[in-house]
Image (cartoon, rainbow over all chains, first blue to last red; front, side):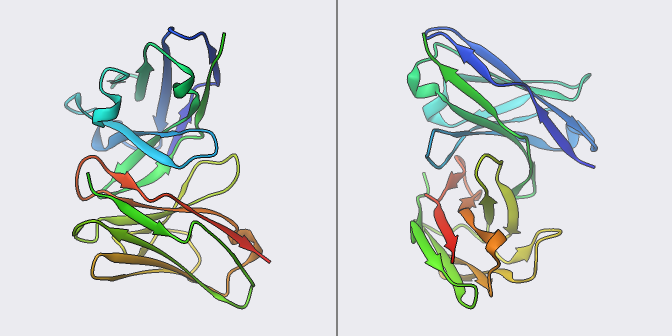
Length: 117
Length: 107
């Protein structure tokens, strides 16, 4: 069974950084790209970027360049996303999702990030 | 970036109706179009991929189609459990872009 288990919700101070994880199981981690998606409160979905774990290649939405950094650890089948210089605009739920072909077939449960002093 | 214009933003339907949600792409996307359902507090779930293919485990009352650059999701005789928010996603070009979402209420 394919599963993407994300780390827990975060409460962080403005200006700080946060790093969240997405542990994959049930498939060969290096065979699929991992995407990250943002959902602001009461809003729609926004693509942040993707990483291809096999070759550690990343691609970012221009809007999130400098904000998000995607990495992957092949030894633990885990993808990571770090968000830096957090502001209230970064308060949102963040999802990881596996890309299969042209679509996202499995999603993590989401990480709620709250930026507050 | 490719814009995905999704409509309607919300709708209320009865269980006997046929529900149709559309996404119009700002340019051709070669059927790199998928549909997702999201329930409150949950992550999106894949319904349709490659514009017309039904994802595993998805009831056959869901279907997808295309006319030109307009893509449609149809729910025939929806069930109460089909309430939620529906999104389209184009993955033809980077960045992938989502439609704005359609909130479906069944009455």
